[in-house]
Image (cartoon, rainbow, N blue to C red):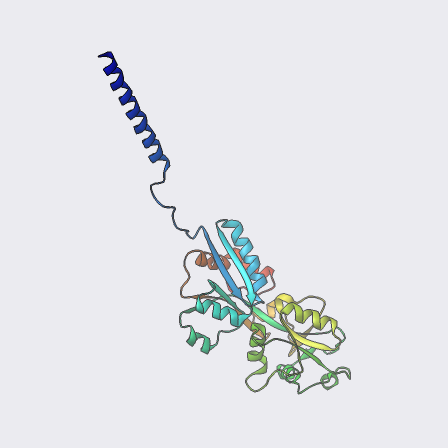
Length: 285
């Protein structure tokens, strides 16, 4: 009888241990899958204009400091690349430093254009050049190859070395639209460079050369040329007296949401527009 009682107690003990073990196992196992990434835990891809790229990188750095769960990846490639990347959805945001063409809007009808800043394009020359003021027509004649010697503009008897951006550049596209017009092409003899920085370096080191630069890249290594007596400065561009001004755009495929919207909202905020000004561009707000 005592033996039977011991057996029953042993069986009950074993069953209690098994039940407790099962309960602990169930408690330690998640009952639901991990939640999907949200706007606070995301990566935003940005690509396009090499003019907008440095500004976008600074804006991204400031934004990520305040939003540690969001990563902003910025790459160049050119304005045309930015338009396609946004329109085709291969990047969350495209960058373009020119007006968006009607053909592009027709190809990508959902393209959403957000102007984040405005930028002047300055005509710059090597320090050897004595000419300091030109008309838009004279600039057009220089870059088309119609005027080839500085003496024809009141300068020294020296050949003009033309430096330009490559095809597909937003800076070149804006320059062609606002200065060259439909009837004039940039001379085939022009030295082509892949970025504003390369233009600045080439002009600063090549005697009697001339090129064009985004305001954001102006420094003392190149000579700034006035247009019709108006100097290429931010105040003159902002009040409309300086004639060569373009938009800097961020593009999305449809209305932005989530982390993309949060980043664009930051760019247009007081903090974002302050960085626009600090980088040498004209704010839009």
